[in-house]
View (cartoon, one colour):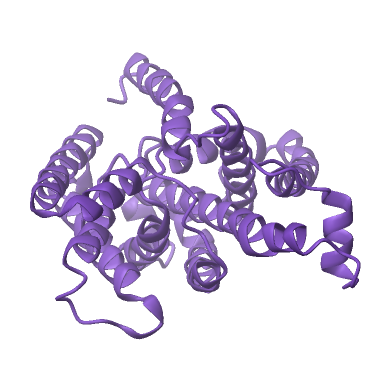
Amino acid sequence: MPAGTVRRVRPVLLGLAVLVVLGVLLELAVGAAALDLPRAVACLVTPDPTCDPSDHYILTALRLPRAIGAVVVGAGLAVAGCAMQGLFRNPLADPTLVGVSSGAALGSGLAIVFGRVLPVLPGGFTQPVLAFAGGLTAAWLVHALARVRGQTSVVGLLLAGIAVTALAGSALGLLSYLSDDRQLRDLSLWLLGGLGGITRDVALILVPLVALSGGLLWRRARDLDALLLGESEAFHLGVDVERLRRRVITEVALAVGVCVAFTGIIGFVGLVVPHLLRGLVGPRHRVLVPAAALGGAGLLLFADAAARTMLAPAELPVGILTSLLGAPVFLTLLARLRATELV
C-alpha cells in the first residue's frame, strides 16, 4: 500500500465513524412528530419519571430501531458488495447487479404470498431463511453462467446477472398476480425498499446475522487480497480458491438475504461505497471491509433521513433514493471500464 494511502486510512476511518454517529442522531431527530431529542436521549440514558412518555415511545420503539436497522443494513450491503468485487476481481460486481438481491427478493416474496401454507419457523425466521436460500441460489447460478474456461468474464457476469434478475422479476410478477389485495400492497411497497418495517424484534434478528456474515467476510481479507493477483497466483500462495468462492458466496447470500427479507431491495449501496472508498484506503480488504461497513451505514442513515423528510408527511422509499444516487455512479464506472477496454 502506498505511504500516502497508509497515512489516509486512520483519518478516513475516523471520519466515517463520525459520519455514522451524526447519521444516527439525524435519524433520531427527524420525523413527522416533533421530538425534544436531547431530553429524550437523556431520559433514555437515565430514566426520569418526568419524561414525556410519547417522546420516549417514539425514540425507543420507532426511531432507535430504525436507526439501528439503517446502520446494520447499510453496513451489510456495503460489505457484501466489497466481498463480491474482490471475489470476481471486478468493480461492477454488486449483489443487486449480479442477481443476489433479486433472488433474495423472490424468496421473501414467496414468504409474503404463501406464508399461510409454508412451514412456520420459530422466531420469525421463515422470511429470512427463504430470502437467504433465494440469494444463495441466484449467486451460484450467476457464478456458474459467468465462468468461461475457468475465468469469470465481465460481460458474462453482467449478462448472467441480467438474466437471473429478469427471471426472478418474472417470478415476482407471477406472485403479484396470484396475491390478494393486502399481499399485493405489501409486496409492491416492500419491493421499493424501505426501513419502515424495522422494529425492535426485527433489529434483534438483523444485528447478529449481519454481524456474523460481515465478520466471516472480514476474516477472508487475506485470501481476497491474494485473489486480486489472479486465481493461479492465489493458489500458489496457499489459497483454496474453490473453497473461498463457496464460503464468500454463502456469506454474501446470508448478509443480503436477511437484509432484503426485512427492507426489500435497496440497490447500489454495495456498488457505490466500496468503489469510492477503495481510492481512499486502498484495495487491502482488511481495511476496506470495515471502511465499507462504516461508509454503507453512513450512506443509508443519511439517505433514509432524506427519504423521510423530502416529501413529509409522506415517506419516500429509500430504495428509490439510493438507486437515483447509484445509477449515475454505475454508468460512470462502466464508461471508464469501456475506455480501458476491460469490458
